[in-house]
Length: 448
Image (cartoon, rainbow, N blue to C red; front, side):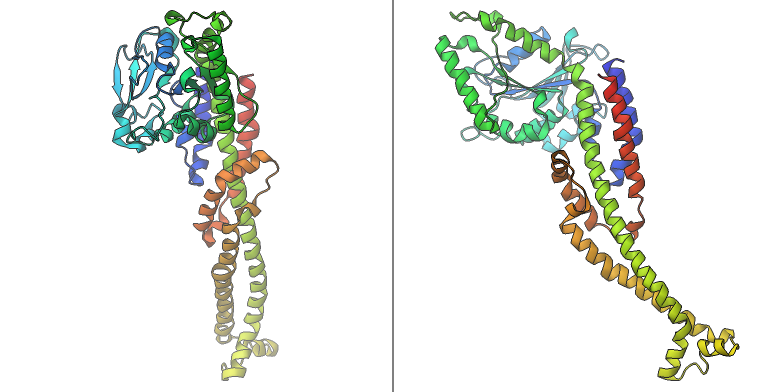
């Protein structure tokens, strides 16, 4: 089955089975909805002289992006080929964020300043017919450069969630020293995408004066990466240059194939699309499973408390039915003959029933008030502040997911009231588990 056909099948299954469950728990469905739309994407990020635009032009086979040592483009530009809707077309950001068939609606929240720096360019490029490349403004050292007028890192974060591959590019002269690069690697990308979807590139190596300079730049980049990631094991870094602009006197033969390997990896991004979608669904549905588990556990505790109160209330109601009239007669000399006395004398009439019925009614009201005003709020307060007691975190993966959803569970509990104990969280959880154990496994088997 082709990737596009599999993606459509997966989209229909998710909309049918999962969207109602997300709505049941007030869970944002927009992230999942976005990655199910449109075509595979590759996000290029890096400082302004790292060769992003040059690489885009190579991949598209046409000089669509301006290149140079200084900043030449301050827009997020989506480059793709679309035979159905014409070529050579440029679509402004205002259209992109309002098109429901595209996955960019969430970017509208970044305001007009961002939207004016967001666009799509369509080119005649068969390689980009089934994918898109996002060229981004060069990263800056925010200590010295002016603010862009929108939250650049937040935009990078959202685009990285959508992208099937993130290519992070450096140049030899600024090997990981830009502050925004540090922020992206240290904070933004780990929260937005998996390590397996990030490719590190040091381009323009032909601009090094000697092999010594190249080794020094590469070593500096590796050291900076270790500081940013906090890890000693450094990921593979592609060392590349644009062959047509090579002016180096060095022998770059050992790295001649790196450029083709990088471009092949980018152009193969569509093959990772369904796997990327499955990863996102897997994570978000497991988060939903933890939420439903917590709410189901709380409801069981609340129902147990309710049942206990109901049990003692039922006993009290039976006693009230038989002895209320006798008690009121002893205290206030009414009625003349209590229900219990009439029962023993075999002279029960409807005249003795109002006091037993009143006693039962008062007992029911007191039991309900005890449950709704004392027992349930006490239970709610306990678990709202410590919802982790409601779930079983069997491994580190579950614990990581729980750290993300715990505030949401606390919010759901804060909005709970006594009638929510009758919600069907157990049934919802069965549907979630069925999707994880059957539907998701089915799709993973299809891509193997």
